[in-house]
Amino acid sequence: MFPAAIEWSSAAPPNSAFSIGLDAEMIGSFYVLSGEELTLPQAEIRALIETYAPAAKTQSLSSRVISSNLNDSALIQRVSRRAAYCRFGGEFLCAADSVQALADGISKSIIDPDSSFEVSSETLDRSLVGDLGALIKQRTGARVSLEEPQCVFQVESTDRGLVLGLSRSGFKKFSWRQRRPRARKFFLPSAIYPKLACLLVNLSRVKEGEVFLDPFCGTGSLLIESSLMGIRTIGSDLTRWIARGALLNLKGLSMDFEGILRCDATAAKLPFHSVDGISTDVPYGRASSTRGKETETIVREFSAQASEILARGKGSKYCVIMHPSHIKFDFDSTAFELAERHFIYVHRNLTRAVSVLRTR
Image (spheres, rainbow, N blue to C red):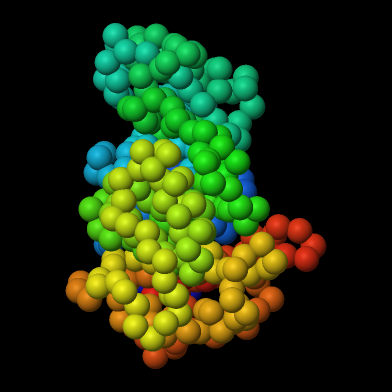
């Protein structure tokens, strides 16, 4: 089940300009996803669009391409920049059944003739991408740059045919490696890689300036990513030396954050006043400190308190919990409903589940 604000549509209206059958209401923007983790990349884009434009609609064009009627350029760029599993996000230009038809469908003044561009694709053959680049150059007069293009045209093959989009901010820049767990001052084997941590924060639907909580913060992976997004960040951990390690990691990366506490997040009274979203990886396994509690018990006891600290106001609030898929996921169903669930295969003895709870 997906958030009610996000609707799916597949039928093209009568006399649509798109002979390939694309819904004409979905031509504001489109996003090209990575090929990892199956359902999670699409869920992340939907969550981010819902975060900034609750009334916006989305449409899946293939497993790796989503279109939306979101047409605010600043918001499109913000969604694309925050999304960990998104290769490209930009304005939707046109759709067609051939490269020549795509080139014919774009305006000659779509970009400044003095600017530079590159054509990129995750799904098309290089020769077709090169052909489209030559056609765009001929049509716009702009020059091709493979090093630092000012604009990127993205062309993808989908279940509906070819689609073409434009990013005016160049290529997305990825910097996961410099924040990888072993590059930080404090390390634990259970630490989450920054790309996944970024996605977990995004699923909580927290915006810049709002308050985000990771109640089982460990080495601080989620806190680092939320801080980088301009979100007010709070963390806690049951073990004092781990909480201090997370503090060391955030300070070592010069992150801005509200604080990190040593506390039991399953306690009847949590030391947090009000937060806008929660996301966490609950402790499990030999590398984590649970003080003898089963993971099922931790989830049940924390969820019973989580709704009390989520800020009340307009719209739903979200609590995202990553946990082993084999456990009984027992949460407070009087306060939350299960909005969606996704799975990540790790190895034959572990598949993670990402359960997204929404306040009732």
